[in-house]
Image (spheres, rainbow, N blue to C red):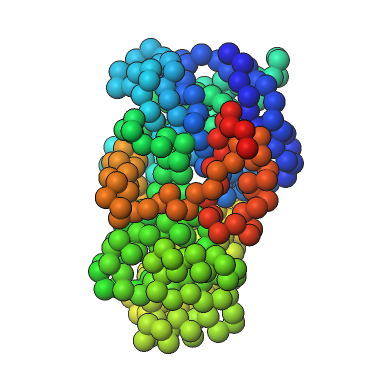
Length: 367
């Protein structure tokens, strides 16, 4: 079938909207008509080749839409079902079997190669292949081929166009607090960054009962927005930010989250910890990025924990976040600004000064 997609042609280039040919679903696959797709920092890192995804490719990995067709062997989904498309995983390795799909042994190949395990791609421009399996979906398009394993069925009475960010950015931020760090009620956390992952972490910290939630950022408007979400303190990025956090917490934070991928900020996130504190590292830095730390500071049981996808099992965690949203306890929709798919470059450009940090592009929408 013919589909419209935003193609990344070369390193750092603007997205190019154009027509491509999409294959029918193969065994184990589904065809999804997309209703909305979140724009994630990881898409931009891949566009700029900080993560070496072969180009040309269709990126996009926070898709939500309606199943239109299913391949042979797909039994738990049928046409008409509403789904959120999350990261891909093999389902067969040791860590997948342990219920830890974000640590799948084939995570990189399944999510960043842009092709199926057999090396094929479902997208073509004429006779030229276009990488079309980014995160098992390549959802910056009107339609996508996904696997039944990375499609999470969601209720049909929800605004489907807004659910895509649950697939990655929102579940990463929330899962880091709820699954990885398991911040207890009464604890303190310092969140470095003001993007959608950081804001989702703030919502989750408030939900967990953290009594001190410090957000560190550069934009005063974004810091004000973080306060509206539940941050108890906001701080600008300065040379004395670590001392400021220590003053607020009476010695250091119990937990910290680094969401920016900046080495200097990761250093701050470690240095601001109290004895026994844990720093969660989430930022998607370019491969090869290094950081300098004070080794003596780590001796006092401080820890750094790398976190992928919030250590979540999406089949369980995404429905949990939806249930919390229904109860008014996790209002992630406050983070979202929508754009037509054709204005994806505008969505990216406006992120620097937009209060709502998460852009969602909607196919077939006119502004």
